[in-house]
Image 1: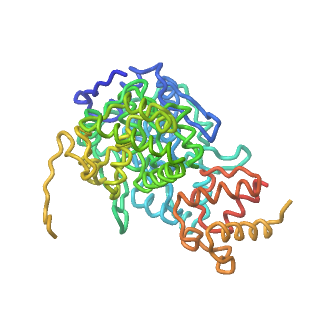
Image 2 (image 1 turned 90 degrees about the vertical axis):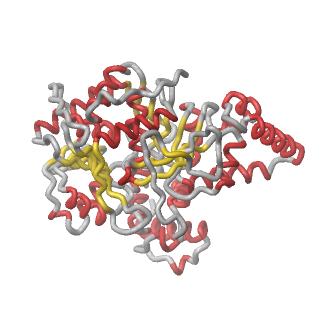
Length: 400
Length: 80
């Protein structure tokens, strides 16, 4: 695979950068959406563009305009990204809301953000309509996805019927304009709306892709919620500007996630530390259950891999030394990305020794998400990495 | 076909056995995350067990926002 970091400096806004990517990578597969062992859809960049522009025109017809705020409450799926691009195309401000919150938590956030548009999955919409305070919610345009066919949605629109072949008008934004409002509570407390500019995203994307370049052929498994800043960047903006493929799973049951690694030959995945720990525990339990002679060989091969990859990862070598382990992850996994909570160095070392580096990072939504990431040059288990290019860090009250 | 009450009762019994919490301590309107002391990964485990027991498919996305036994039983019942 040829890796080259994209140059996003010519672009003023996400709509522009993504739009050019859709033109550039037309025939590449942009999205694969699977539900258990069924594949729901596979969209090329061209298909994606057609769907998003159709939604964008519907939004413009409904009066959605520059700087209007459009919320999305959905689990990871293709319509999330299509809806987000449609909002950017119209010059809107995206409000990605955590779909795991309760309806009574969603309502105040939607009211606080003063959204003019809501794109929501039907099961969540049903809960919203049943929540106390729903009648006070004043959102002019609501688009509901996957609603049952025979259901009357009254004033809301059915996503599947939002088809419009007319060409919408692209509304450009400037770098300093707000691109999104992301509600984040950090490690606790009341969620606050973090206002991130187009420049924040473009610079962040440029920096991350410089260290972990995506390209056509790379397949990113999107497991973390896309409303979260990490997946929004590495599961949407980053892969798209580089022509890579994003794989969405409609279920996160471990057995289907495992299968997806093999079926789609996943290259990168982001996981929360809790999942990483669960993976480690599962692998350790399997290793422990091996017959003594096989365990002896495994330990030697892991030690050999550790020694030979001390300075930098060598995926080809690691896959040859430990084929069964790598096959379990699809055979093409280059790295896992993690952050958001403390990860024990022993866990990071465990995966690195198997030839599966974990890029551990640190960041916070209001600072543009990732601040530091381990660049694996060389790998170190005891750090969250170096500041990304263009990021300045000041340590305050280190001993407090 | 099971009645709703039977579905609810079986659901509570299964959860009780799986997570070793006495059924007598579980009520239909309890938040199962809190009452069973489980995280989202463990919930997926429970859903797989429920699918196998009731012989239905319970899509994760249809269960978003569901946190009490009664609503979970309603979702199962609608698929029986």
